[in-house]
Image (tube, rainbow, N blue to C red):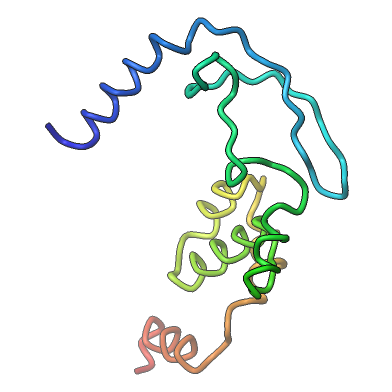
Length: 136
């Protein structure tokens, strides 16, 4: 049985255990110390049908920052992964309109102004353009 079929089978089995449990109010920690209470229905629950929380899965403020500081690793917020993703997609020559949609932008203007600045304007780009224009 392939992994996808097995995964779907296991999730369907799990649904029988947790689908009918009422959603719970949970505090979500946002940027700048703000919080928001949201109703969430969880797929995986603890033995007493409560949301299963482990420290590494929590949204506790500064949890990751504290662990990274202890490990001597410079902290960068998870949001920075968005910039890494966008700049790598641009470097891989992803379609700008498609990438804008992936990032939730209405048009690709933000891609050009925000993420485009992270792309090196090296000789390889000039050579690619010259080749595409039939000059090489």
